[in-house]
Length: 161
Image (cartoon, rainbow, N blue to C red; front, side):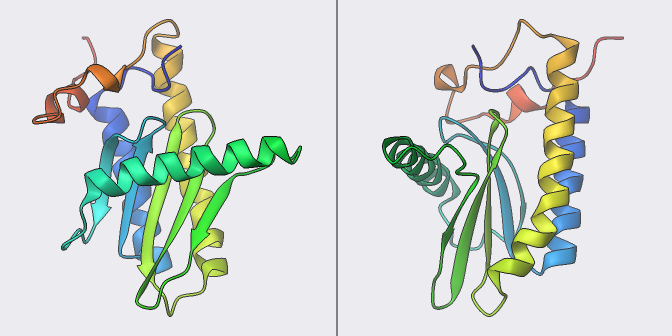
């Protein structure tokens, strides 16, 4: 089964709006929506010198490793990961089975505040992805077959008239 439903430009617009609102409320620098394979679906915020492709891949793999460890210790409730830094910190939050939101924020902002504001964003992104899945429940995106040099056309489709 595909991790992501077929996405149209309205879906990406709604996800981008949720990420943008979150950044405004939380003070975070950057928010990325990443599929379970580590591919970046969309981003909002200040990218600066951050290699988002590598960040996406490492965030997805880090989360997968943490979930595997949780299963070994018989805990199925991993929903987020936090990496504290000196300048910037990272919070990775699961969005159901669709993927992850990776949030880069200044280390002076408490992770509790970022988690608080991320709850609405996660709900909004999840709702939009469920809406997209309901349009075509048996179809989805396989990002492993993606042209890494130019992924934008895949996520900019319009709804059929």
